[in-house]
Picture (cartoon, helix red, strand yellow):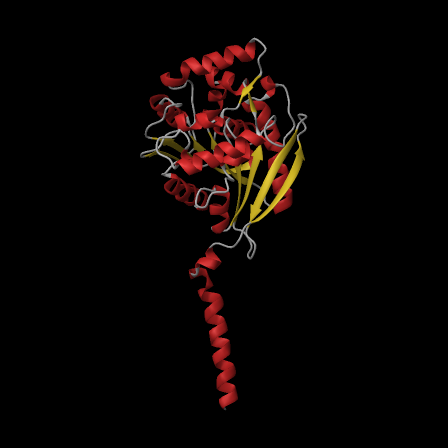
Length: 314
């Protein structure tokens, strides 16, 4: 009888452990497993793709993170505790993917004028197909920041069958903020007159962040200077001309627009017009307080992370 009670007790303890595991930090935040791939785009370049996934359990969602002009995949995979969006989403049960655009990091370097929302959208179609095959899913979720938002629009408008839900952070719609118009026009003119690359100068990111930790900026600068010493000027023509604006009314998937209260790159009135022009039946517009254009690396990043998770989990 005593032996029977001991066995029953052990079974109860085991069941309690495994069912209670979800409430423990160690179970909520398994160590991410990182793998890297090179995906060939039918448009020509080979695109670097980094994957992070939960180690101990089957993921519930798949998301592709599309970066801005300044950094490539580093903006989402920064090795600073609490500031890594990939790790955060993995802790919530997602499989996460991030990319280096053509001419960034480990991806194929092309002519700087070839780095545009539409060309990169074709690259992301190849990446989306790769992800779908690997994860055995029909659609993926997409998150874009700045230039990444214009690429996300191109992907979702031209290949709607690829995208389940979408988050756009810092989308410039038909124009840009007056504070950066001169710089955008200068870079666009340089592109059109033959200067297709300029030094990346990642420290200038602080001009796009409202409140931030200096250590985060320093780590960001340290990595980006090595991975992407130059950035293409082609994306600034897109920003100047608003080439991607035509795609906004075409978007049908659920979409969240996120912008910082103190935006310096996006014109907030113009961005609100973009939100109103979007024809998706399920859409939301969120203004993040005490934040600017670099939402995922500013002090308010925790709110941004939680909001992205909530939107994609719906």
